[in-house]
Image 1: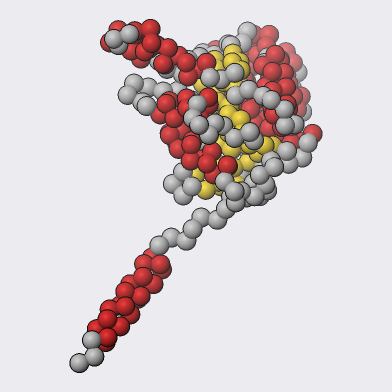
Image 2 (image 1 turned 90 degrees about the horizontal axis):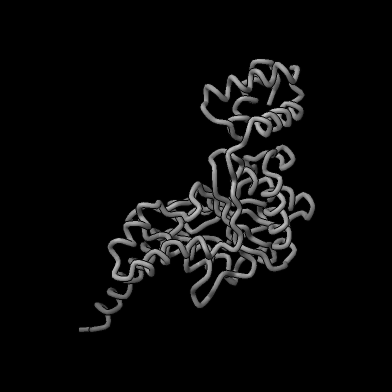
Length: 293
């Protein structure tokens, strides 16, 4: 009997199985192409950068009451876009005072002055643990548009108890043998200066063998941002300046006196004065006056 027939049949069966597995396997992800857009959203599930053709933002000139913060972020980002040394930045402080709006507005201004120089990549807070994967992608040899500078941005960044994701961010910002790619900068916004709740830091201090070392482990995450920029609650004059700037940009047919009176009433009902409250008020007023936003 010819012993080669069973062997040939086995090889043929194995070949069919391999072909079937190839058909079931997902196709490899295409190499990222940073020339497709000026902004992208990181998709950790697929390991891809999704182009964002239209970024939700306001013009930088409409951001009032944050002039010093605006100048710092713009200068640091402009240096980075030009290929000069720049710092990772944390924008922290009061809610609704334009932290995330400023990052997006600065990105737009830099690209308006130097087209296609800067890419904005958004990573969500819950995906921070995959930040090393994103950096590996941007460091990859198949990356198209590798000459573009990449600003990775995370909005509302903070960490809670039992949350170890901060260690991934910490190593990316300042540690690891690979380091941060030269074409990448990281910006984060947060309501907390130290990114950790106070009770988390206090708990580490009370339970650790060496309390000072445990606390330093938590606080040192913020220290890895070379630029700290604080945002504070605004007074009424600044609130009116925000309102006036928006009203002028939209050409609202209303007197300043009537506008300010309505703005005061709106802020009282909201219990706060901030850039976000000012914008929400202007949207409501524009609707009532029949003006398209």
